[in-house]
Amino acid sequence: MGRITSFADLIGILKDKASQGKAALVSSNPKGKSLSFHLSVLRATTHDPSTPPGNRHLSALLSAGTGSRATAASAVEAVMNRLHTTGDACVALKSLIIVHHIVKHGRFILQDQLSVFPASGGRNYLKLSGFRDEKSPLMWELSSWVRWYGLYLEHLLSTSRVMGFFVASASSTIHKDEYEDMVSSLTNTDLLREVDALVGLLQEACKIPDIPFSGGKPLADKITRLVGEDYVSSVNELYSRLNEFKERSNTLSFGDTVELVCALKRLESSKERLSEIWCGNWKRSWLDGLWSLVSEVKGVIGGLEDGYEQIEKTFAGIGRREKGYESARFSDRLVIGYGDDTVRFSSGRFSNVGRFNYPVEHCVVQTTLDVL
Image 1 (cartoon, one colour):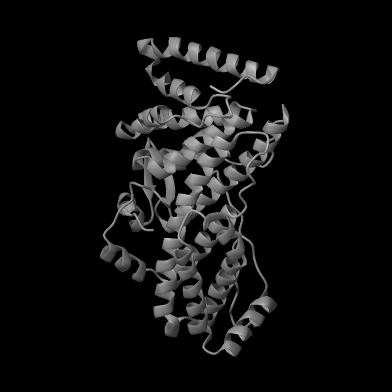
Image 2 (cartoon, rainbow, N blue to C red):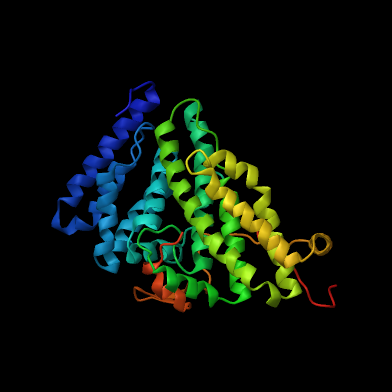
């Protein structure tokens, strides 16, 4: 527990103790066992800015993935209720950290309940663009982290929806040869969608706020490490897909080429920021390899440099169409419905979600002759 520096800190501590005491009494009743997750959430999401959620409490919540679907749903509901009902920036950030841990380390049944919770609960649970905590300068600074982190996690869930598996999930593993076969079996359209989504995720990661001056560094460091792990996985996924496009260069349609150019241009626009933020944690040569591959793909799909420039000009003339993100539901590619505590998936690739471990603003270009 950090030092009490203000009356607001004291109020936060009292709120934590009162909430936990009440939850402990209720959960001790055999009829209230479902509230045990609520108690774990309260203990993991205190008002103290100096302590991220403890591993013990995170493990207790992740253990819900070993039980029934109803058990997993109870744990997710406890996290979301905490996020929805708080106006405290520290509590909101810690709730979002738990969501991130579920995506990265939760079992599929728990991830599944996280993905469909908006459909069952009717809430746009990660749309935090209007979050403001004005209790102190620190809370005001941390509010910007809440707004960004909520949007980043929406991008992460949206990208996972497009990919057909949860990006950077520790539970997702597959043999390298099988993975390469999976990537090579994708259509150009699916590959383009995946590249576009991965680029969008990296772009959002680049918008990470500065470390708060007033405190809260442990929270910011925890979030930065989690996003950094996603960054590595996203770049590795891009490597595989760009290599595949390099192999398919002779079969790409003009429309596919233009859309790929669009994605590469967006990726290159983030080059400086990606190097600035993340290269201190990872070998620079690893990231340099990505830019080298991007240059190779540009050269192959454009043929001569003049040809690539012509594609860029064509793209500029056609324009962009942006794609928004919705946190309240998953698209048909991932989750197509649920009912009676069951969830059905339209993508056969998603049935293997537990096997992958490889490491938006959207641009869609119409390329029919009548448009040109």
